[in-house]
Amino acid sequence: MDSAPPESTPGLPRHWQVTIAVAALFALASKLLLALNTYGTNDVYAWERFARWSGLFGSGLYSIDPAFNHPPSMIHVLRGMTWLASITGVAFPFWLRLPAILADTASLWVVSRILAARLHEPTVRWGLLLLAISPTLILISGFHGNTDPVVIFFLLLAVWFTNQHDRDWAAGAAFGAAMCIKVLPLAVLPILFFYRPGLRRRAIFLGAAGLVMLACWSPYLFRDPLPIFHQVIGYQSIYGHWGLTWLVCHIASFPDSWHDAFQHYGAYAVLGIITAAAFLINRRDARPTLYTQTGAAFFFFLAAANGFGVQYLAWLVPWTVGLAFIPVAFFTAASGVFLYLVYNWWSGGFPWFLADSNYVGDYAGHLDYSLTICWVSVVVLAFAAWRRSDPSLPSRRTLLAFTVTAILTLGYPAWQQVRRTDARRYEPAVDHAALNSIRASERASLSDAYFKLGRFADAVVAARTGVALDPSLLDPWNSLTRACLQLGRLDEARNAVENALRLAPEDATANGNFAELQSRR
Image 1 (cartoon, helix red, strand yellow):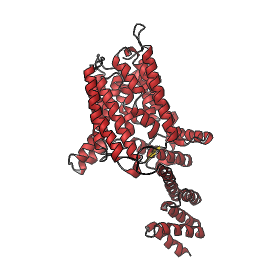
Image 2 (cartoon, helix red, strand yellow):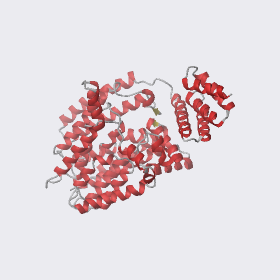
Image 3 (cartoon, rainbow, N blue to C red):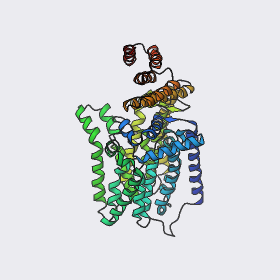
Image 4 (cartoon, helix red, strand yellow):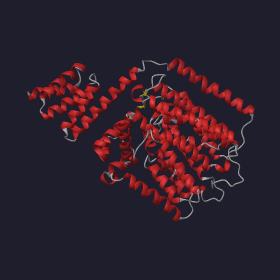
């Protein structure tokens, strides 16, 4: 079991402390600068929509927006972020990313405490340095805009509390807090459960987790339990963009029924393997530490995943400390290069502001080489976690060979990709204009949601806002026409439908609205 080091165990020498602290401060500053000066990926404007709509509809958001697959506790968090944006004048995308940025720094400290007894090992020292400076976390926490690093921080807390005099209630509370961000912790619940001996300790752990979830998921859990369960627990990520799913989609030829089965049941099979392994491993006297087991489960889970989002790579970084140096360095380099290329592609080249995959398209097909290298690095991590780690560093000759290989296989192809294929294709100002169109489209969708609820006056207001944001967009004009027709505002409806037909004379919705207007006149 990982525990605090005895007095005789040497800690980090002063120069290592300074080096890791400087690296962590550099990473923190880089993330804050990215968060303050960029918008991020399309996940950010999805979260903006969730924040606005949850304030309007509460738990009804689960029935209105099928894309909202987060625990209802996040509605409370989104309201807090919206309030901070309103009182500070700092935009919502910064507040969305700030928790992940702070969680990375806190995770570094927690990992150093979990592995305090091993700080004399070279692989642990170098692992902490790579964690502090991780390009993967800089890009995901500082730019992407999602909550995955916060989940991992709470899981690390659960591991640390378990090691601190068996504080099962605190570990359970930390696990429950992680479940309030995403339901990802279910992937490692079997390990945290079976690691504890005896029903009493397991019951305390689960009870504390359940109480935290019950408190934070309320009151929404009691208002709409079925839609919440369906969308939060039943969420499936993007298929065919990673690892095994990419292989079966692009290399092998399988019937559609095989793909459907893999997409719907692959995650359950992986969870079953993790559960069986956790049960068997924790029955042995000589078992790996909880930190090691949890990390290995995440490595295996992502290596065999049937769905993927690039931000999932943040799940792995804090669990790499203490593994053999070469696999960790390989993953650090491969994941950093892959993420940089993905975000650069979605951003239309450097400098970055908005990385919109919905507009630019999938990276699969465009970045298959770096995708494959990154996935292989995760497989190597899983293998390294399964083997007993060597605490010594490789020889200088091995390190030199690895460096040369990394430059040839990762660095040079990435440079060519950025310089030739993915150079900046349009002015950065286009990104800012695109945000107006995105927000105008969101207001049109909000107008349609109000329309379905019979709230026609609210539908008009939302559509008018969309038209003001981007009068060249068709959907807000169509939404405005439809809502005005329901309220009998025929003059405004006529103006709206004329603008819609001017933009798209052949559009079926606009022509249908025009026919209804004519019939009412």
